[in-house]
Length: 417
Image 1: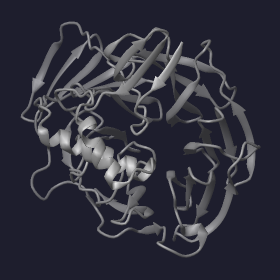
Image 2: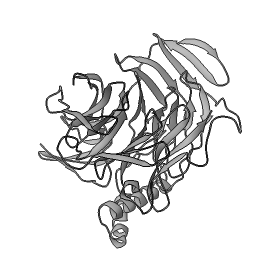
Image 3: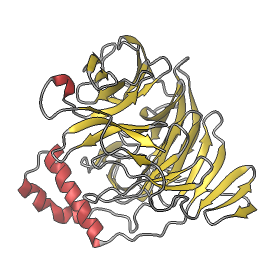
Image 4: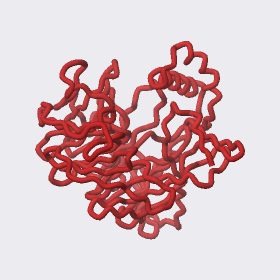
């Protein structure tokens, strides 16, 4: 069966629908902030109001403690497609670049120290670097989606070893790494078999755990796939993204996967060792209808993407706008954009925003589900958990920012609690 993707300007996203079929809950005492209950050993918290009042809560410094990146200058400070940055035990930073396949190490002041890896298919090289993670001892593990390969580099940047991820399911290949837990990577596999027709969730997604020690892959859970529009033409199918479609977002910390479907605010905490649901965090969110303003924001996004990535002229983009307005779209907006778990187990939730709108500050929830409040992040950042997303430690925030000209910077800010 041939598969055609008719919308290359929109990246493929992995979506899932996770129904929450729960037994009757035993009520627990309520407060003005949270309502708590228990169902078959699963702790259920409904967030009602934030704990912090005006001028209370955590703050992030106005100026970065460390900034890496320049408009012009030495090549080691010019950044282009940073796929992630990690902080080392001595305060240094290692970042990975998609465009060059390089790893670059900087000291705690942001001074360049060394570069490793590079473009290619040989040992210690990357074709499409998509993920990096710091191991104990400051070794770094990377994931190359094009080669389906995991590689480990020592604290000095020297290549140590590599291995290809072998799928335990015939015909399925690993599509991405969504996080890491100790010496395990959390992967997604896409199952393209049995394509339905219409506005549906497809392909199917399997979440699996890969061991860096012995290379084994074990399935954690299976979920339905992306909400998209599919049409069939004989033996061929054509699929396009479904704008404002719903699906899951996930976040990882040692031993824990947090997953939420953007249809509603109901975050499940999953034990990585056994896949059991241990807690659920809920919040009542009003349904927001898709308006003409949202549609126009999508059209402008498509114009921008096609000009930047597909070589459209301004005239070509303008002429394409009537067709983009007819693109398949959901009638309501997702309830959130992304989620992230910080080093202490707090859950950061980014509200959904449309193209061109200012990003609102994320809400933060304590490990027990208490809604703490919002924390304002410096402008120019990417998403919480997108490629090049944030790493939030006990007292710092590390990630990728862009200025008004689109120049990339890796910055670390102080987080004051």
